[in-house]
Length: 115
Image 1 (cartoon, rainbow, N blue to C red):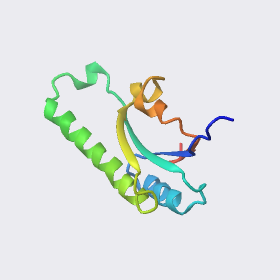
Image 2 (tube, one colour):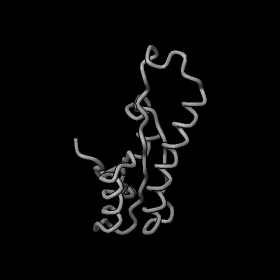
Image 3 (cartoon, rainbow, N blue to C red):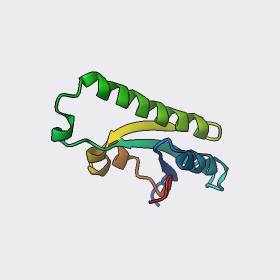
Image 4 (cartoon, rainbow, N blue to C red):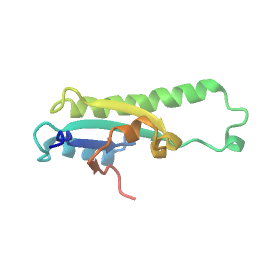
């Protein structure tokens, strides 16, 4: 008989009030014992025409802010899952079958914001 897979929970957030409420709801939801949880914040790449002339420091600060959003959600989830992880990913990587996000092999996705 094959080894049972660990139940995984993937929480995507954008840091909004609605997303933060969903992260908190994930903590109190009745998940199976031994579940693992991962947080992802996805950064949508901007078209090159829209970023021409924008200093690189702007993108560094943007990534730093999004990483802080992911870390904030991870800390909330760590109340129940001390080994919770977080990831900042580009939209391209999020749908790539070889990306870190896909390798999590989540069984459940907890929605963050509507629409």
